[in-house]
Length: 224
Image 1 (cartoon, rainbow, N blue to C red):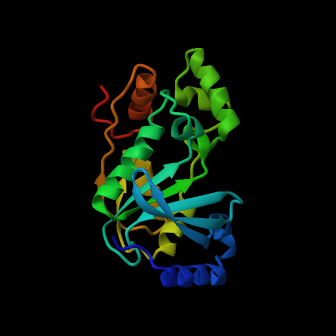
Image 2: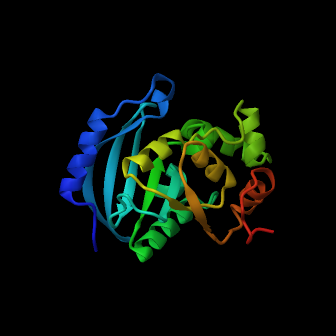
Image 3: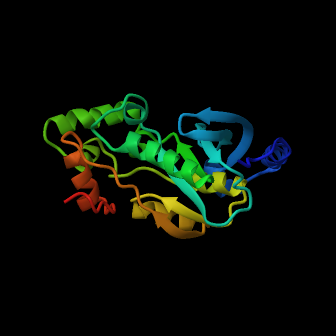
């Protein structure tokens, strides 16, 4: 299967070293600084590391050669330590990430942009605080508000910059979240379609999923 070649990676890294954002957008700037092959249980990927204006370490996982391509399947995934690494059943994050990687590997082309935006942008410790409030009866939106946060604190400027680093011309977004479409389009990303993620609910996350559907407007057809 074709992949981004070493020569192409060298050019991308050189572009990153020369890239400079306007002052008003430096917080969402992303410069490619390193890349490597990454075989996984889902398929053969490459991993690309970015230096970004928010001081966090974001990465992109690519399958196939996505440079300058149209209709690229893309998942913008926000970090969830408990779901992605530990297999928490309180959310659908881990299954969404795994399903996205499987879909992309099956299509033999695509990108997973992995953003360090734990807990819908409130951070790991505050996410655990929110969990504690949810254990007392609040839903995920109510818990965020009690802690002084908006229901969703995430931003997608860096994700757009990362996609632009690959010169992607248009994407099909793997997502159930309409706000991601709106935000990415604001940053100039051309989205030509949606690839749904259908994750079977369980008894631990059904309330969470119902809240995401009713209060956050997520497109969850399998959640009543």
